[in-house]
Length: 430
Image (cartoon, rainbow, N blue to C red; front, side, top):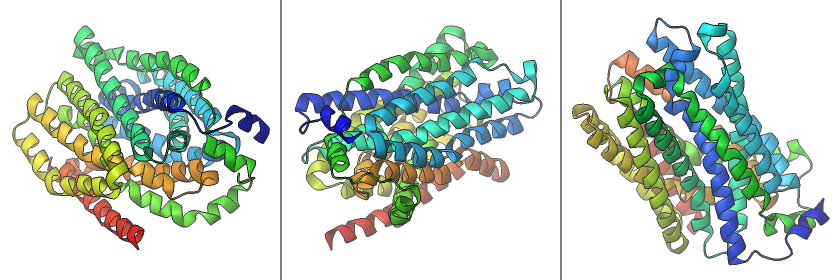
């Protein structure tokens, strides 16, 4: 095993090899993120297809519970697939997660509706979502490790920022496909079943990402760790040794994951609460994705000079101050222009934080436990703070009748993360 890995990487990667790795990891991650997020973006038509008609609120809540199931299973995927990546290598783990995500994405694309097969339909849908969640749990740790372990000391933050660039790319692709389908077929036909084409489109990207990932070498840092015998063989001993680091990693996820899921929830929020047309929500998603793609590399490049904590502090502080006023403005003056402005600003706040967070998270863990530690921290954080965000926000709005609850929710997450960043930055200096 070690000889095989070492034969792939004899020395540190060249600049060309580094760039090829960034492209490969990012393309594959865009696919994973797109397939995972398409479920949230098309939540309204999915609820009408797979759950009993009669009560729109109940059907939507059941859809969000199914959405949350993908997050609940993520920690298990992170532990199992992360250990696989820490044992046999990053690129083999990434190829496996890509295949699993494609398999899970096939389910909503082809599964018959509730009207056709009854309760079996939502059961099959949940199983597909669980496969997606299992895959996503293993993807993040392996992807972050692949990016950072191929970077030089002068561009680690820049390279790590491409993890969030990929997430922005996934959002952008989802928005473009959603907009294209709605413009071509019409909103009613999307609700009637043409939304499935979005999941079929996700399958078409799979072979491309798989092919590119097969051409990249194993990371030299992992190869050296394997050669020195630092690869963990005991699952429980590794977990016990790093449980404290995982707890810190989970705390890092609060603002990151809540903001990301609030951004994804805009599609439902704008249609259900603000009564904007479905096409407007896809334009908002496109603006959000493009913002992340532009902002994150700039922030990552700056963080290589000033450190990661300052941008993260700025992102969470600005969100803490402006989240509620922004949602007040959107609720008071609902329009496509206001929706784009709010989503763009929130994406800037997210980009400031999330461009640097992967590097901070990765540096918590040693090489031989990095994929497992990063993936587990991320998955647990997303499961606790992110997967339930659409469900919690929808419930709070329904119970309180206040559309601005979402702003308060985001503000609270930002302030919690700001406090943690202050503690981490101080401990780093001492």
